[in-house]
Length: 185
Image (cartoon, one colour):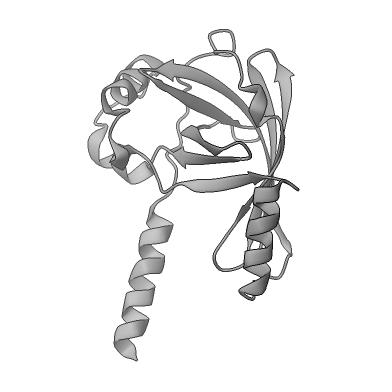
């Protein structure tokens, strides 16, 4: 029994350690941002194995800027947090990297996303541990941060695990929701 507890604690610790990198500088400005992906505009849901979920409401703020409202619910369907972000993209090699500007703290998260189906996409954040271990700059600037991410953009270790989102009320969403319900979540 103690071995199972130990393994569980290690897995929880590893999960919590994989957190997004936060920066005080962005990779590019609003004016330099590339055109937004119109397919992202909608309501999205991500279901978690323990029964919780995340909901995104994505709308267009400007030509190249998205407004994202994020809600996180626990397994008892209780709202645990609510956040608001401005999101705009830059192209680095063949990837669209998102600048995710936190509204209250004026900090930036970075992520890549990809489509896995008509009504499904995933997002992966730039990992804080990877950056801490590999990005060795005394002062972080847009120039040196962008250069580092450009150099490492193809490395899977740069990113956290994928979080999959389903368009709310789509056939894919309903299928996953029913599976979660049947599984007791």
